[in-house]
Length: 261
Image 1 (cartoon, helix red, strand yellow):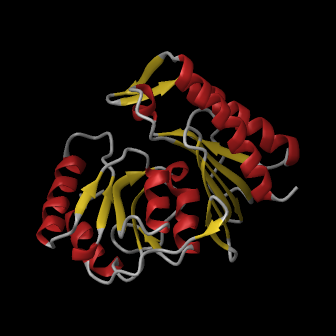
Image 2: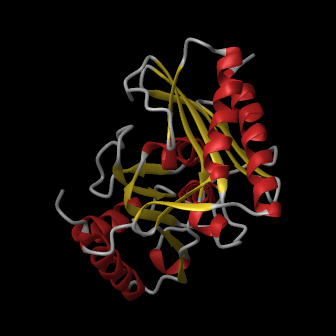
């Protein structure tokens, strides 16, 4: 079976668990300040890993909860079993399962699934991006005053929060149509790919948050880099995604405010 088909089957398995817990209730635990984890996260990742290993037992898995393969593994699956756990834990139906397959450091395919809406975002390198089987493209807008901007806030309530608010203030000064903070980066990236957002940024994300969404944006004609405009690594990083045309004006604003590492 091809990796994209396996990714979709794995996302279905994980999504079914997440949807059942969302319907029936779940125990919430904390991994740190403002950073929650639930049984749904853990069991979804186990189900996803089981599907991957059924078809590719020799492949490595890098997951948010329990799988910690090195990012430079030649065959690597990057898995977020429940992106948007805080939304999930509070009964907000805005979360996703995100799975990407990387070969020698290159993202070959990705799947982002909203299991509550049965909403699917699929991308394969060189083959385009698809939302519910319809090919999509980024928005064609050329000015910031024509678009909505998506944003994420890292769990840090210090320098990164202050920097994010400062960047938002500058963006409002460009007369953007508005800011949306939905709380699930994988879906936010897909909103760039479908043209709903002109751009999205967050000052710190993990690879399982952005790997599948990164490919979805690029395959839909957009651009994804760090907030400084450098190539995005498959490690913890800032992320800036756009329709491409808006990338430089976005980089000037969000790069200026990004806290020093």
